[in-house]
Length: 210
Image 1: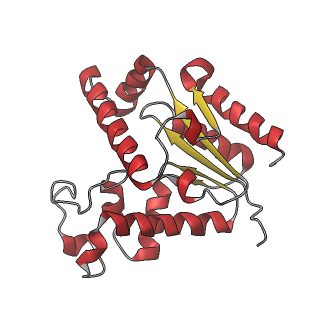
Image 2: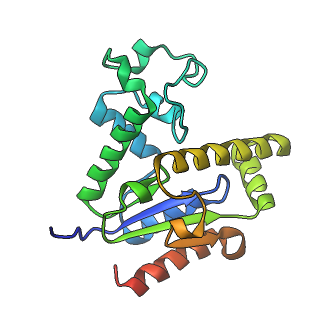
Image 3: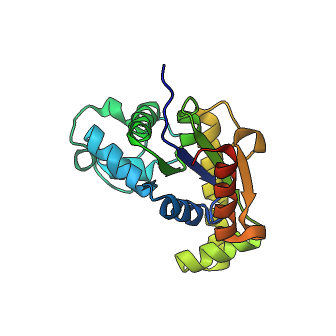
């Protein structure tokens, strides 16, 4: 089988580490699409399921979303189909994974989160990156971005990281945030957001992918 020639860059990240900023720089530098929240809209169009379902249940492992997870939305307002079996976490993950594969088949891009590195593990070339940062830097970034107090930011970070870790390890055979799970692990506190993006580009150049 002929190997794919499009370059896929996947960005895993700790909450508040600036991973989305790194992804944006890479997207602009290479002139390729960035899929983050846009991926949810794409899944919604391809499945006929309201994007609120994927957004609300993003990176969590609940087998069936409950009313609190759905934020008060009724099923009839969330779905264009009446098949409630589509609510299973495994089904939602399978739909999202299929869309990720469709996106990768269309050309080079940057994908943030959604276990894209695992979903596309057979794709070549694939550059999987994990962005972390020091605790205080993460808290300060979340405080500024969300306009919330320090205690709220700390709670939000802990909750988000816990969900992302559980989701990643539930659907893959790897460990979230561990060096062995990615090609590159970068601490943005030491090199900055732009510096982290440059390290990724240097790696890509070294590998001869671009």
